[in-house]
Image 1 (cartoon, helix red, strand yellow):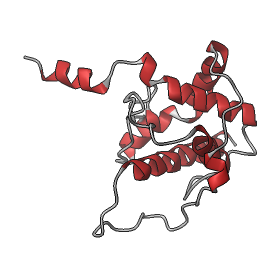
Image 2 (cartoon, helix red, strand yellow; image 1 turned 90 degrees about the vertical axis):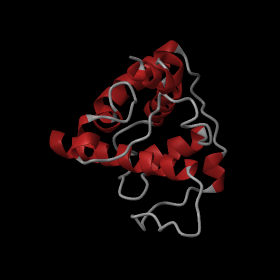
Image 3 (cartoon, helix red, strand yellow; image 1 turned 60 degrees about the horizontal axis):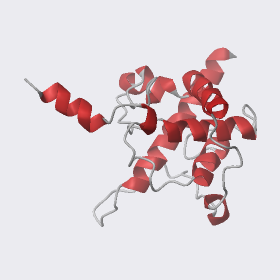
Image 4 (cartoon, one colour; image 1 turned 180 degrees about the vertical axis):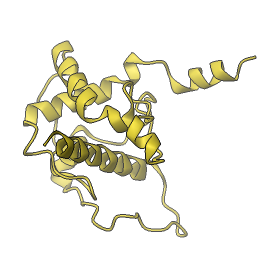
Amino acid sequence: MWTRSLVLSALLVLAFSCHVQQAQSSKSAEEKPPASSTAATIPPEALKVVNPVKPTASSIAAGKKKFGYDCAMCHGADGDGKGDLAVDMKLKMIDYRDAATLKSVTDGEMFYVIKNGNGQMPSEADRLKDEDIWNLVNYIRSIPKNSKPPVAEKAKADAP
């Protein structure tokens, strides 16, 4: 049971990340269609849903706890996109520490993807309450504010 839950969570995180990466990249005529033809179309009304859970310290802490259990295996403990599963599967995950990463993604969109799944990612509706999902949204939004910018880390690594 635990293994199944872990695999389902990994797929959830993977599909959400793929969706966010697609939203950020501009499409050209030569680009191939996404690998998964089962990617969900997010209803326009879902994009406009406002997070009813205020991003308080307790909400962010609850989201961080869920993230650690369900998301870190792919997104990394600090949101850098270098979780063990992502590295093992050679997945290129986005870096949530970069403030621009989720700039074009609404809270409603993020909630919809986590709750309903996307592409190969299964729905988390049967495992997580809506409030848990909103707490995850709040935590993911807080990651860039609570971490060093990736650019600064790169410059530091490049220094002699």
